[in-house]
Length: 264
Image 1 (cartoon, helix red, strand yellow):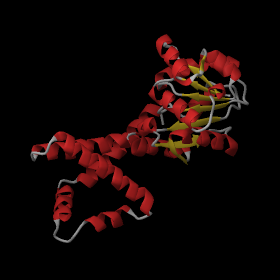
Image 2 (cartoon, rainbow, N blue to C red; image 1 turned 120 degrees about the vertical axis):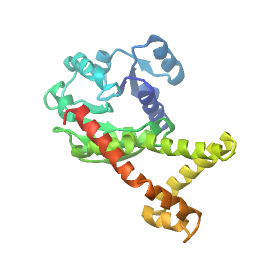
Image 3 (cartoon, rainbow, N blue to C red; image 1 turned 60 degrees about the vertical axis):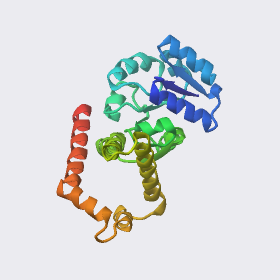
Image 4 (spheres, rainbow, N blue to C red; image 1 turned 90 degrees about the horizontal axis):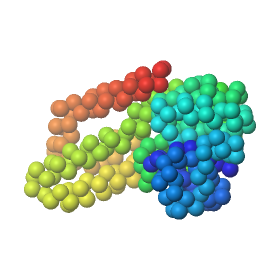
């Protein structure tokens, strides 16, 4: 039995993904304190919505999809109903496995996960890291569940702040680029809908090339860049304005902020 505690956007995305990948509504319990949303979940997915304490008693895997500021209170509420045989998976940003373990029964296996918002479209990228009591089979179980909403990669916990900076915050960087490209097209007289279609599919196609070709990004970039051509002129301007250095600084700033929030 799986319990999803917290059915906001990410929790509901995980629920929908699990049901789409073969889990039945009878396999899943959901905790959602908002009565109206709880009723919607029952009607939409056919799942049982129960209090967190009951979910902790009945489920062997708990997937905690709460905001970080709500997590400690939730753990203190459910810990009396847990045993070390339960697997706890947290998708709360910034909370280390050590922090989670300190509020759980001794020996409880904990997996820390960092998904990103494309999970809402089934195209997420999630990194997972195990805690002090996490065995390979626990990581495999977490990967199987989180794989319902996209790709999953296993990392050492020391890399989770960098994961947050690259893939957790990463979609915002691409939206920023997309926004800039669309606005440039509009400024040049193109209809906004046309510019957005051109930009959206270009980004999707470039991502497909990067993931599917096996080529290094430099090779792919050079394949688009004819000597003395339009792409070369554009890239020269990006280098002149220090865009590469700005992106590196931005990612480092995101990593440092993640580290500060997690108390590392």
